[in-house]
Length: 169
Image 1 (cartoon, rainbow, N blue to C red):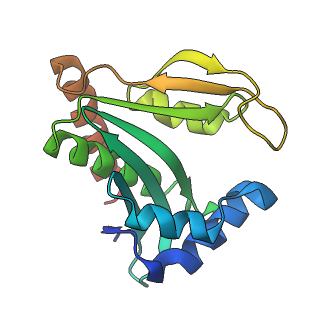
Image 2 (image 1 turned 30 degrees about the vertical axis):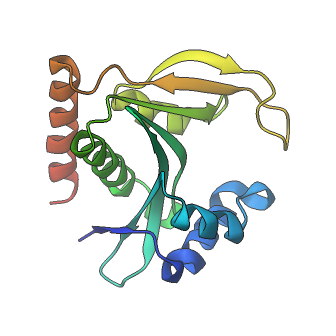
């Protein structure tokens, strides 16, 4: 069983392991996460398993009626078990609670796996940031949701919640 916890300093060893496994030498520094934990506009969530291990995380900034997902990763050993869906669903629920209407993010143009999960949650490609990633000058795809309070988005969100319940059975 998974639970969501607000990221704490105690999670950072697990978070850094995920960063290294997912992003190699081009991962965020530990200090960046420390700063985000204390940032007033940020919300960092950890998916924690029964053993108390953070197996995935999602960070976002909340600015007025928009949330910006800054980073999102699941430990490769625990992928395809629902942790990513669980994190996104919890992040969207936090957006609903805070009356945030839109969610945006950037994703590597080559990251098909990430783009698929974002598309499943209604994110659409609305632009490109050329040479966004410093490690290889890869472009970033800018993705946005429609207003999450629209009935069509709520229906999609509820469909994803039901899907998650099936995965986590």
